[in-house]
Length: 540
Image 1 (tube, rainbow, N blue to C red):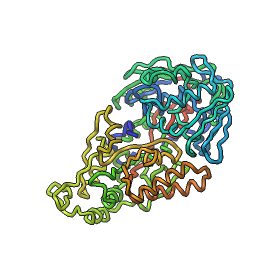
Image 2 (cartoon, rainbow, N blue to C red):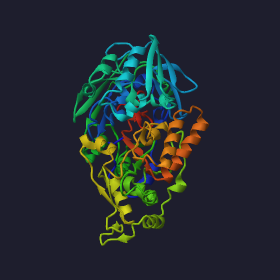
Image 3 (cartoon, one colour):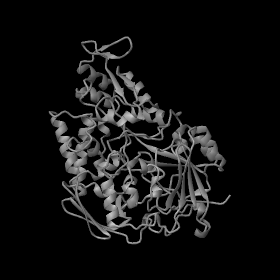
Image 4 (spheres, one colour):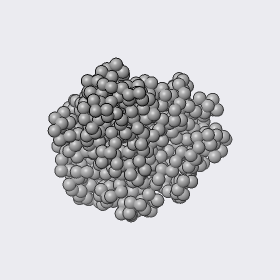
């Protein structure tokens, strides 16, 4: 995945202590102490204004990458809900399900009382149309990967659907909880992809009233909504009447607007260097940890520079992750200790292989033949070739890595492609170092990105790479294993290979920062998704 995450710019050290003193988002029904005395009947009404730094590029999370964390989750519900506390899948639009022992067949019973904003009903045929639509050109890879391998979909009754896979797929159930496979109406599912970016009818607690690109996205409450996941302990419609997302690129303008509490009451992706200012102005600061991978750098093993595992391992141990998070996020993010985030149910601790060791990194480079250092500080081989790597992005995060690796004698050229060229160039292996993060709480995200059989193979593993073959076998097998303990063993083995062979470089675990007016209560993050079903605004 080519990440469109708006990375925080360089932050000053010392912000972390300020953040740790702030209030974190509540998980379940969000009855905060300050609001405990407010009756539910007094919570209804009002418009929540949310500031975004950039237009998400559309409203359909199956098409555009960034919208699932903001707008999309309020528009479309999913078949199942991932509980971040129990780390288990729970009912939502599907009331129950069965999974075959070989993880090839999934059968779902659907609610019979759900409607979309256009008035049509949720049926098995509608869900079938949704799943089939995700295979079309233009659908984002995050969504398309989920339905890969489906061999047959049947609808034996109006509210029962069966999905069959050619091969076992243990990740399918958890993957269905993601916003980018939110269920939309039959009409929306059949729309051309470009039209789905402009408009969609979902079954969520809000419907799309207006989308003016680069200006605003307006959502209105559905008064007939009454099927939120039990996790939220909320019956009936949302409290808010309206949610308006305003596109305000300038940090200072967004910050001033939310401090004033007139134009904005909530802002996403706060730059860490502003935390102290916003908190001292009376705002509530919240944070949420990415449950998947955080920032990782897939290394192109087909690159003439990175075919040698010693060079890749030098890059691995040459990252000072503690320093990285202090500089790049003001200490808000967490140093990566494995391919998966600590909040992932299949987290595998590989910190022993990720210890910063500049001396070891230099030794590995010299063993690999990069023994000479030019006047520019960059290493050269016996033929005088410079150790110069290309990466597809130019931002504060990679600039930190650029500086760290230069001290080892490695040049990192930050050469971002045009947006329209990004995925094509990344998947063609044009870059030595890639850049991505993922959000799925299922470990199959590793297969989707590093598998060679049916994944994206972002490390471009050679056909004669026996360790790469073993990695692929483990990644395939974990997706065919339902038993949690056995699956954990497979994920552990795969994680050790990914890190030990440096097919990728885990850098940091992302922590998103939000700031909002103290009048706003009970916003609920689930992973990185934003749920507004319980959110309400106290009167001024």
